[in-house]
Amino acid sequence: MKKLLIFVLLACVTLSCKQAPRQVAPSFEDVLSTRRSVRNYDASKTITEEEVRALLTATQEAPSWANVEPTKYYVAMGESNRAALLEMIGGNKERVCNAPVLIVSTFERGKSGFFRGQQTNEIGDGWGAYDNGLSNAYLILQARAMGFDTLIMGMRNADAIRAQFSIPDTETIMAVIALGYRAQEPNRPERRPLDDIVSFF
Ligand SMILES: Cc1cc2nc3c(=O)[nH]c(=O)nc-3n(C[C@H](O)[C@H](O)[C@H](O)COP(=O)(O)O)c2cc1C
View 1: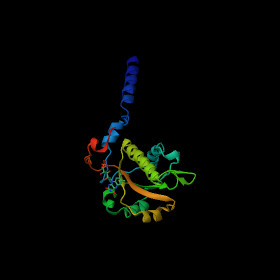
View 2: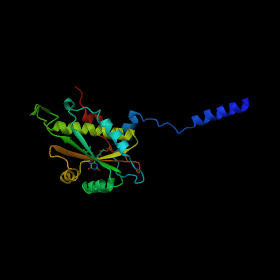
View 3: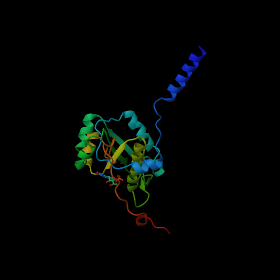
View 4: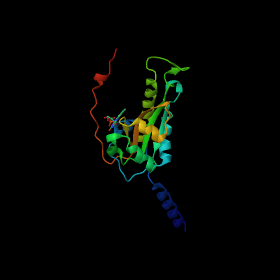
């Protein structure tokens, strides 16, 4: 009886050790080096609204001018809206037609770069675009950390997108971002040498 008890105990310990392997978060270096613009998505894989919410929560940590948070996101993951948006991104359509989620990124004008309604310096609403890009950077890196892939698309029809998603005139439409899973390994495009882009004084 004692032997049987020890056997059962050992079996339980062994079984509990064989649970599904815990997902290990990728290192920041891995996120940076494996994040690529993906132009071919796996049509068999889906993404849930819960996952998109978790992803967008990361963008709330992005810095912005005076913390005004001008960036807004419009998520097209219902089939009819996704299909409509695919028609508004020109030649990008065939690159992202199998991405299960498309996200429109906008910013509210007159916030970043403004104080009491007055433009603070020569950049004006350019600071809104700046904050929007920062927010998008958080999005694409968090996406990679979650195992997803992305494509930022500046080639898009802003007027058609505004009408489709009832985006107010007070917002500037920036990129459409595809979200999904890579169907093949993307290449890493060459980068300029560091000394081309940095000056030390
Ligand atoms: C603002 C912006 C607009 C872009 N627009 C497009 C686009 O319309 N279509 C596309 O295929 N890639 C687009 N890209 C992706 C770039 O081509 C890509 O980031 C660049 O070649 C570097 O490759 P990587 O992202 O894999 O490092 C865009 C990227 C940015 C940041």
